[in-house]
Image (cartoon, rainbow, N blue to C red; front, side, top):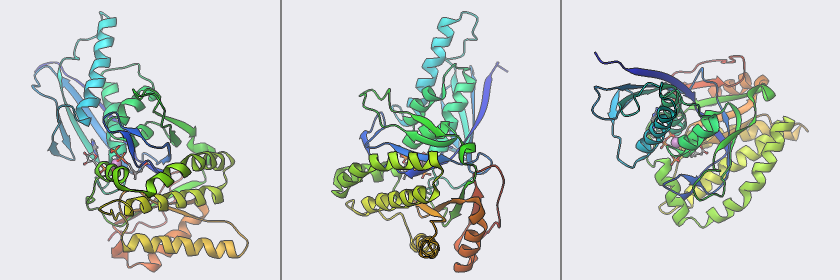
Length: 356
Ligand code: ADP
Ligand code: DP6
Ligand code: CO
């Protein structure tokens, strides 16, 4: 048996509060607006990727959830693999003592422990784990920022999963994308009271991929120009809310931006519907929950957000999570949900695990 080199890495998903939706450069994956997300705890939704280099391998190969996937020349997977391989070549060129295995083909095996392509950010954790596992395999001196730039070229949202806590992806202005990367706005411990509840409404693969959907929005939506104009103000306001731990402000902006994203999806021609009846009912429940509090002179107690799919993510202070889970379970027959998870934060506050 030939000598081989192998490394495994995991990366968690991140769920955006200010959504990335639109590219100004589809090859380099440069966004039309900056975005901001929360990286969830790795204990729950994650991708785990093992990369192995072996002189006996004849081509780069990837298995995703146990099934062979295609690595198209010039495609996103090969862009990431090639970039990492080039970085290894530089290490080998600079250090005569370094093991020479950059020219070996790689076999990559990745598993998601949650639904793939269902609007729960599998491309984000997936490409972050891929790039991270190759960085370990190749023992690269790369910083999270360097890896963020490479992961971005696999899937835009992946650049944010290289960091924990509250993370911003700066759109940048450089035509080569060298200033379009993610950075941490605040660590998880800066707001450890913040929790996320994931309601898996459906684990079906979405009808329109994020990549195809956002491109169609850029090309056909007139509302999209309005969205681009409001996002910079929201980025500033939500950053301030995070630094002040102002949940009311955080919630208002998060819900508005989710609605704005789904509005431009609907304004796309042909229209894209990511939300379903259960998603809309969750919006109504959270709205009512907040209204009762606001009417009593209080503040917002929960914030919903939906990525490109029907599954809800509800951000809320830890003390409200149990109440929210109970409310949702009361309104819906249990079979409406595959799973509800309370995530993020130090303690596991999983009040109830609902399996359909
Ligand atoms: P999602 O909402 O789950 O991010 P997308 O449409 O953005 O859905 O992307 C789904 C695609 O991301 C998959 O079809 C696959 O190509 C890629 N992907 C998902 N998980 C992984 C993984 N673990 N490793 C590599 N690529 C992945
Ligand atoms: C709605 O990062 O999946 O989840 O860059 O084409 O791979 P590609 O798209 P992707 O888009 C994510 C869209 C979103 C919002 C977000 O995560 O910011
Ligand atoms: Co995605």
